[in-house]
Image (tube, rainbow, N blue to C red):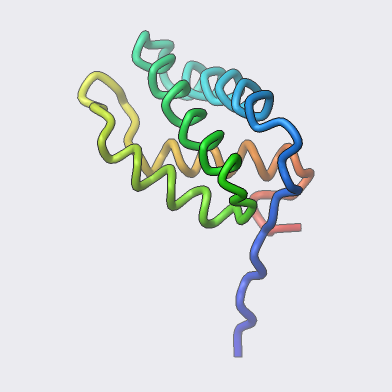
Length: 109
């Protein structure tokens, strides 16, 4: 029988705003590097960081819950001028957070 994947929990946030600034900068860099630098990438990174900060301020530390919140709320974002969608953004945020924790995103270790 396959074992469930354990949840990944971020440390409690001491400064959500600073985390949000870090995430916005890193996500914008990822967006610009992945395809083409686009003006809309700044808006995408800003919106994803806002969602993340609000969730962290509300005490959310579970990575899975943060990803679901980003997917859900980014559905309202107009991606028509972008190569991306809400799932790509949420997955990129997850990857960036895993990397910051020193966790291999491939195998969870």
